[in-house]
Image (cartoon, rainbow, N blue to C red; front, side, top):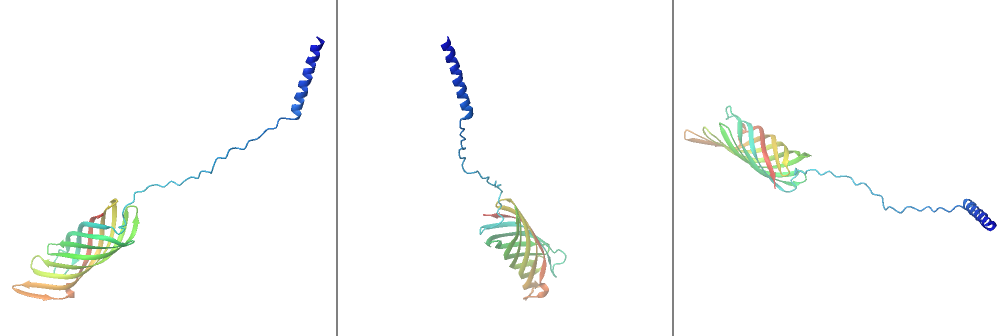
Length: 220
């Protein structure tokens, strides 16, 4: 019995000694470094897709067709100075914002009718979203005749125009123009009562007036 008691006391003493040693010498704690997480992720800017309209010809062709009108002043047009007709043509870009074109116009009033072929050089000065603005200067040849008597005329023309348009589709636009045209007389032939007379370059027969158009344009 004494031996058991001694062994028990001895066990308690050894346990207490081990506990004190543990408190005096605590177990070392190892702090692990976190694993590398790679390169930081950079946020990429979000690009919003926008519909691009072909307001620039980019050396591609375009055909246009529309209504053409003018208010031409003349000494032999009595009252009706308003002319109405059609305008058709082709245009292409030469360099950035600069384009050239050729066209044909037919217009008539109650007194007089005329046809014109022309060439023009244009500059696009405005472009935003699906809208654009342009101006042009041209030269042309005009021939016409009166409806009530035998009078034929020929002119050299200088038209200027201001054009604004809107693209309803990437390659399809509607447009309107407002301009002014000078017509310099080159030849006049008049026949009456079996007699005919002609004259070249009469300044008194020079014409000028407002022009306006409304049409559509297709790029291809």
